[in-house]
Length: 422
Image (cartoon, rainbow, N blue to C red):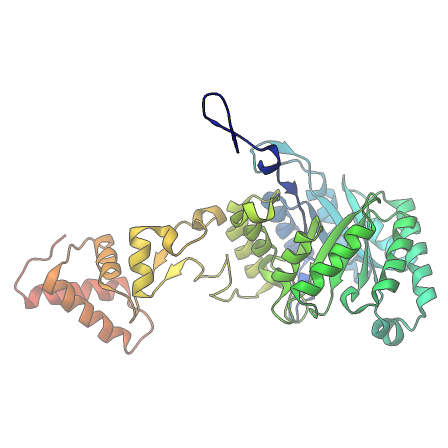
């Protein structure tokens, strides 16, 4: 930096932070998430989740696949007429527009007509067309040739665009498609009026390097077109969130995911992981979302309750152990400064506070802290005795209850002929 006359540094404009770009969040819990084996949501349950997704601040809610059943059509229509028309409060506390409401369709007029009937009452309706482009899908599933699929993409998007101004096109199994052919299909979709190009890693096959390169290639190729490139990743190899972030780093400005990462097989990218990665590593990505993160835990709990899919305890962001600490070294660090072992404030995602869990590996400081919360001031030899008894309990069971801690303290103080110190 140069120095000014009063010796203060003069900022270099090229080094100044730029305003973060906005990433649109497309939530597909109610469509792709409901495809989880064993999950079936009623129209009312879908509406309840959609209302919470609107509070969460998602930009687009994919409400379902209307042609699949009368019940799904009913659910999509209810969401379009209520959530799709209701103003909401954004993360800045201001009144904001309702979310977009999307419905999925295959590349057929019957599907597209059903999708349109489902979402047309929303203020911001979207039709989402899915058409396979990998050779294995075209040969064995569609039984169509490459030229036939290109024409299907063109005609279906054009038909949908006559009904709806917002049309998303997804080349299913894009990551296993021939790249040059994939571009030809996408070009046909854009020429026909597609406004979003979604690039699905349908079977969770790609690595972050591969997926990022594919998104970068497509983003560059369509740079002059007025389209948004979107990332949609599955978790078959446990790479869905990493692939989604790689897509964002290479030009995607919409991401698709589900609450708790539910979905076909191993599930979809967990939307909250992507959101919190962008927030926690903001200087790295320089991207932001409209998500109200304090609603994350509440949304996770609702989806878990209504779908019956229990969240694994060690699930990032929303698992029961996400902000829990049991190892003594970690607990000691947490008691001194929470930032030693937590990169996020639990309150930012709607969790009241961190927890220090007493286990066999817990230390004296954590035990002392827990006892103080129960009203005991225990030091020195008495703390040693309490610690020994607690670990004896933990040798035969997973956890020690507050009642057991009260009993242990009472026993220790009786054995030393001392009054219980409250």
